[in-house]
Image (cartoon, rainbow, N blue to C red):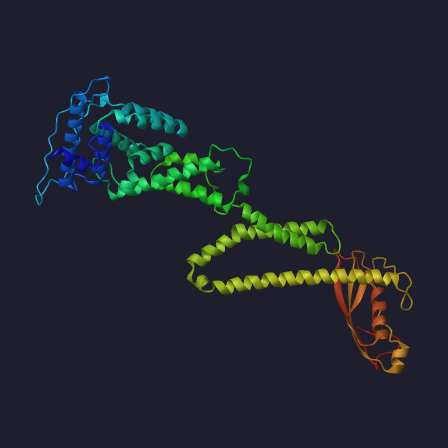
Length: 469
């Protein structure tokens, strides 16, 4: 093999030094492996040995200015290995070519892994990352066979140690490109190893991003935010971290993130903010006429009902819809029914609030207007008294007839505090007489205020002095 062909095979210039020759060889053997490309691997290995020997020869022929410029062609204690290019078409041994035995006492990898293990027990990720960067910077002083042995020991530690360091793996993967090439200098990874390394790399990048953002979900970040104010994204992130650690069989890494809430129906920040809207609407409606303790109680009840619905009822309905085929098929009808009930209840509250406001306004107006007939003060004395209206003589003479409905409000003393015409007879005299009679009614003091509707029928054939109802 000509020297020119040697440098062409390695893809370097003939003036390349020892480090450039090693880098070119390491790059090529990751692409042309002995088990998949035996011919190319043999040629590359032979070109590497020839280029290294030529570099040492040229270095020896020059004046020595530094003692460390000369590099032995083979480390002490290593046996020389002969590689011959395989003929085209000849079946080659599919087994990978093992690296020459290296005395572990000569390599610093074991000491490095022991230090990493100690740092992992103390969860000192940043310190282990700095240690790894310093270790990788010293690998240029070792031969390719030694570097391959070091890489193998590091991989064995990552696959077998139950608490590998995440930030350290990021630096090692950037240096060796395991997940990119799906193999290392001695062989390719199996499909299971490739999947494990890729999942572990994703776990490491998630942890690195959480550190840079000072995520409150990290166990090392102290936050004054109480657990019930967590967002749904925070809870999902914690659960995803726990699940990935279980899938990779790395239970020790679970402590890096705070545990998710134990309850399946945890209250989140979104639930609280969403529940404040119906509470505010209920407070506005209840305090349309008067802001009192009842208004705040109604708002609090609306808040609790909405919060319970979002935290418990809605998740349970989703489970029923998901696992019950009948419910799943009728889910849209269920949604429509719930929406109709909600709007019906809102309409009822709005109507009752408007009626209450109208009745109180009517009572205020009646206090400012003159009395219709005899409006002497009404004294109930906790007794029931309901007199029927009197048929006005003028209405009889003019032949005025009709039906009147009066809606009135009774307070806790039993007196009628306001009344208004709900359905008019069409004649003002009949309506006013009905209002006059109802305003003088008395009831046994009730436990709470209430509204009632009293119907009256004015007919010409009724008694002349009064009307029944």
